[in-house]
Each structure stands twice: as structure tokens, then as C-alpha cells.
Amino acid sequence: MESTQFGQPPLFGLYHPAAGGEVRGRGVVICPPIAHEHIRAHRALRFLAVQLAREGFDVLRFDYFGMGDSAGDSEEARVAHWQADVGAAAEELHALAGTESLAVLGVRFGATLAATAAGLPAVEHLVLWDPVLDGRQYLARMQEMHAAMLVDSRCFRHPRQERPGPGLLGFPFGPELRAEIAACDLRALPRWPSECVTVVQGGDLSEVEPWVKSLCQRGIQANLRPATTAVDWEDRDAIGRSLTAGDAQGAILAALLERTP
Amino acid sequence: MKERACTFGESGGLYGILTEPEAPSDRPFAILLNAGLVHRVGPFRISVDLARRLAALGFSTLRMDLSGLGDSAPRPGEPDLHQRVVADVRDAMDFLALRCGARRFVVGGICSGAINAHRAAVADPRVAGLIMLDGYAYSTPQFLLRRYGPRLASPGAALRFVGRQVSSLVAPQPDAAPSGDDDILSQDFPPKDRIASELRQLVERNVALLFVYSGNWYLYFNYRDQIRDSFPDVPFGDRLTVEHFPEADHTYTLLEDREQLFATMLGWMRERFG
Image (cartoon, rainbow over all chains, first blue to last red; front, side, top):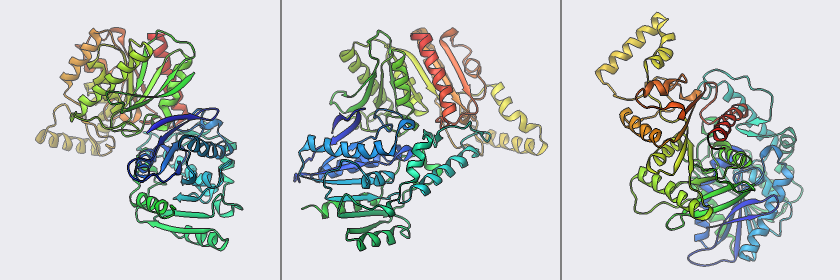
């Protein structure tokens, strides 16, 4: 594992070069979730990156502007920054590893950002784990969780009347950023950065299944890999907890290996 | 402000981010430890924000992952968790001394990070300051009165309380903090005598102490003088600063609470080491 800084303002990344067996000449950029989900997923994505590197992939994990160790604060962030960050990460991985082909793994809102990224070269395979399809619904759910937290006696001894401000589950999210997140809708995306899309989804498939079918009808090689482990993304009690990927990890690994030339 | 990733330790397996002010200074370096399993950024990026604010005041900060957490590799050959923590923080101090000329350090953390910071401070004389957020606390008569007094005002609650006390006499738990049916952040603190002895050592070394408690720690702490009352034989003098934010939660989720916390920590750093 090697640390790297790229872009301006600088983003922090961790590069896991292909190790061990076969070197595939193939890179994977991991686009993490945002906000509290970003922190929750850190351990699982690190583990996944190590596994992928062992399988011969060159892997880059990175933090968006205003997230993790990267420069800035989420209050100053915009969706367009984050979309550009994905492109910059792909460029950085190419510079580090010289890989010939690129796969992108996006998790939750990171899946939205991966699918809508700016400056991406041709993406051979896009893998989306528990993608946020509807930004409006996602934001509304975070706002509900925040409101419920304020009156939860396990968090606060007395119900809190918070001063108006940008706080959303511990992160400052300004009105512009919220509006931009709400405007993201993967179901209405006109163009896809890859002709090959795998969706790894835990738990309820009712929303994702028809969407994957609709992608196929548009000529995209889309397939759905259900995972029996449903990650508790929307469980308020789990906000501070590191998550376990369960069998989603195996499904992601298998999807990437299957599509490797 | 400059930030860079650092790997250190005997086999280079430890990982952290060093935040430095533009102009070098001879002030102590801060070292921030993991809160539970959360990686070095801290809950809601508290450690990132704090490190950058400290840099604006002229302090350098290393936010590090202890071995086996975040992006740090497990430490081979040291099975004891406490010894591992002490060795990890010592490696961080050695690294900062060698690379940056650091001579004195302030170590801090939240919850398990606070406990680990305490261990590191006791073990290494280079530590000049200790910040504990929701760390050790031991009951006192005033603590018990504040915690249980209002309940005793109600006859039903008083009967239930007496029942619980009888049960605890049957199965006593020496030195344990009081427990309740609403205990969600259960802690098992070490014997008070040991902590008293360690605090005395720190005071004798003139280590500055900042203890901050949130409302979530109400099972263990409920008034500002509780630390001094708990350890009457420790001559804290003006080395101890205690702050209590009874409205805040354990990880300062609300931005307004976090601002209060930062104001306390930055003010203390400036006053003690600025």
C-alpha cells in the first residue's frame, strides 16, 4: 500500500499495487460513499482493495474533496467537485500503475458519482454496490434520520432544538450541495460511462431489479448480483459503526474477475 | 498548512496524516488516536478538523491509526493490547522526533482513544499534555446524589432504587461505575487506586490535563468538580482543566456542540502551550 496525493486542492489516496500472482494490467478505482457512510465503509473497502490487489488488480482508494483526509470541508463541496475527483483518481491510477484498462467500483452515493463522473477515460466495467438510485429519496432519508436522532434519548439526554444550520448527521451539507444531491437520479441518466454494468445489491431487490432490466433494454450489458447480507446503511443506530460487507465483497470480487480479459 | 501521509514504526506498518503549520514552531506536537474502530479521521472527521484548526494556531498534529486499525498493519509479536498501544504511540513520537525535531507531545482521544492516550502519557515522559474526551470517571457522593436524588423524590422510583441497591449488595461490583437500565455505553474502568496513582505521576511530571465529558457519559460523570472530588489525594493544582457539555452526545454529532468542544480544546492548547 502506497500513499498518494493528487489534484488541487489535494486529495488523499491509497494505492494498492497488484501483488502476488497474476498481474492483470487492469486498474480498479474505488469510489466510496459520502458523509457518515464514508467513514463506516472505510474498513470494508480497505479489505476489498487488499483482496483485489492479491487477485492482480491495481487498486486506488481515495477520499473526495471535503471527505476523509482530503482537503476541504463538506460545506464547501459540490457534486461537480466529487464527479471531477473520480476522473482525477482514474488519471492518478493510470499514472501510478500504467494500467491498460479500468474498472470503477462505486458504493452508495459513490455509485452515483462513478456513473456521472467527469473526465473518466473508457470504463471497461462499472460495478455499483448498493447504489443510491434516487438522490432526493436518499437525502430525505438522511434528514429523517437526523431529525429522529435529535429526540432520541440514547443520543441526547433531552430532545435538542438545533440552531438552523448545515448539519446533517454530523457533516455540514450546505443548501446547494443538498439540492445537487437531490437532483441526482441514476434512473434518468442519459449516458453511461461503461457498456458493462454490474449491480451488487443486498437485501430488497424490488427497486433495483426493474432498473437493471431497463438498462439492459437500453443495450447496456447490465446484470444484478444479489447479496444475502443487507448492509444497515439506513439504520440510525449504526451511524458510528464500521460496517461489514458480508457476501457483497465476494460478489464484487467475482464480478470483477469474471469480466477480466 | 501542509498535510502529508506518514508511515512509521519498526516495519513501517503504522500510518497517519501529519498536519503542519506553514511556519515551524517549537510547540508540542499533538497526536490524535482512534475512537474505537473509527479510522484516523475520527467520528464525523473531528480529528481532521481539529488538526487543521491546530495548524492555524501553530501546532503540528499527527492523526494516526493504531496497529490493526484504519490503514495501519497489525503489530506482530505483541499480544497485549495495552502494550501495543504504548508501543504504537512511542513509535509515533520517535518518528516525529527524528523527522521533525519534536520533543514534547500532547496525546488525545475520545472514549477508548482517551483511555489509550492516558496509557501513552503515563508510559512516556515526552508527553506534556493529555486530552481525554469521555475518559475515566469515578463516582462520588455528589455524583450519586445528582444521579439518583431526583428519582428518590418519587415513592415508586425510590422503592425500585432500594431494590436495586439490595441486589447490588448481594452481588457487589467494586469500583464499577453505577449501571442503569438505560446503560448504552457500558464501561469497565480500572481500579480507582491505580488511576489515582497514574494521575499523580502525571501531575508530578507537570503534564497538563484536559478532561472533557459529554452528556452521554451521565452514567459516570455529572458535575465539573467530580474528578477533583474523586481523587482528593492527587495534587492537580492548575494542571487539570475539566469541561462538561451535558447537552452534547458522545461524538459531538451536532456542529454547534462540536464548535464548543473545539473552542475548549483550542483555548486550552493556546493557554498551556501557545
